Image 1 (spheres, rainbow, N blue to C red):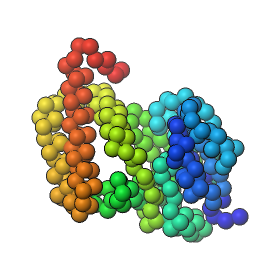
Image 2 (spheres, rainbow, N blue to C red):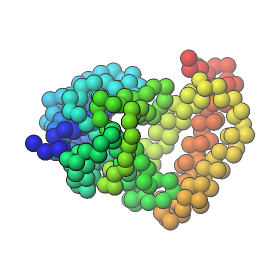
Image 3 (tube, rainbow, N blue to C red):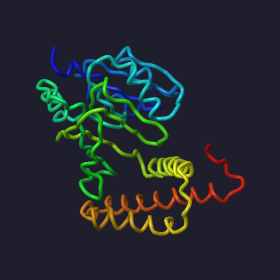
Length: 259
C-alpha cells in the first residue's frame, strides 16, 4: 500500500474513445478509478471497463450534478477529478504521492497547474498558464455547486498549490474550438440572463476588446507566437458571442428563455 492507493480518480465522459485510453493510462497508479458516462455512442464505456469495474451510465443532468454523482461513487479518502482530454504528468503523480504520504494538517485540497496544448504549442502566456484548478481534495470535505456551465468546486477547508502539471489537450481542431465556444457562450448567456444582467450593448462592444488586449498584451500572449494571437482572438470572440446571445434572449420574441 502506498499513499496513492488513497486516491479515487473521477471522470465524467461522453464519446471520448479518442482520448480516454491515454487519460486512463496516466492514472493507473490510483487506488480506484470511477467513470460516469452519459450514454456514449462510441467505445468509451468499453475502454473504461478495461481499467475499472466502477463504470456507470447516467443521463446528463449538468456538469456539477454529474460530478457529484461520480463523487458519491468514490470510496477513497482523496479524489482527483480530471477530464478525458487531460493527462496526469509523472511529476504530478509523484508529487501527489509525496504530499499524501506526509499530510499537511488541515489542508483539504490542492490546486493543480494545468498546462494547455494548443495547436502544436504548450501555452505559457496569455492567461493560459498556470491555469490553476482545484482538482485534488478530500472526499468528505467537498461537493460541486450548481447553476454554472463550468465546474464549481465547493471545499470546506484550506488549500495549497502543487507544482506538477496536469496536461490538457485543449482542442482536437479549430472546428472543435468553435463548436465549444458556441456551446459555452450559450450556457453563459443563459446564466447571465437568470442573474439579471441587462446592460448588454456597451459590454458587447467593450468586453471583446478588453479580452484581446488583456490576453495578447498584458498577459503576454504575443510570446506564444501565432497560437497566442489565435487564442487572444478566440477569447475576444467568446466575449462578444455571450453578450450577443444574451441580447438575443432579451430582445427576440421567438427565443426560448431559460427558467
